[in-house]
Length: 154
Image (cartoon, rainbow, N blue to C red; front, side):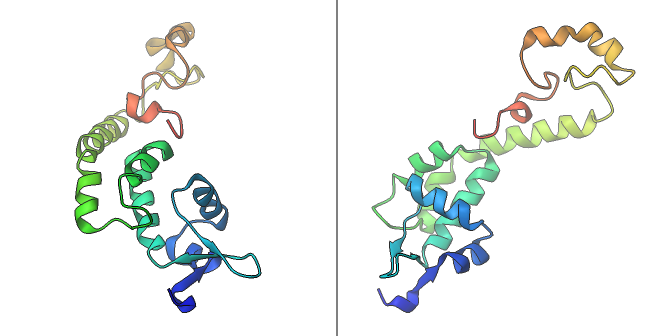
């Protein structure tokens, strides 16, 4: 590969929308890979932009980094996803996206009601969650749809 086809961290960050720290982190996890210059600076092949777009889409769907790594591991070493790969890797996302849409619609339609967070500051909380009874059901806003209560990275 010709050196002009290699991109510096700043260029990849600018083009992908990821912070340089995220690029280094994804590199350390093996989600993307870089080479080093004689001056020990990271350089990325242009194909990393497609891989990063895949990571962004997968994260937006709610996949964890472990799930993304598992999906990308099914590709031949060092190859970025093709259209065919994208279709195979994203096939199972439809149900997940539908669940997210349903959860967001429920949130939208109930924004003015108690979400079971335990604050008891809304007038409706005294009816929906008196004495914070919902706390015994677990952490977080228990009345939110499950998909919206998932911990970050879960």
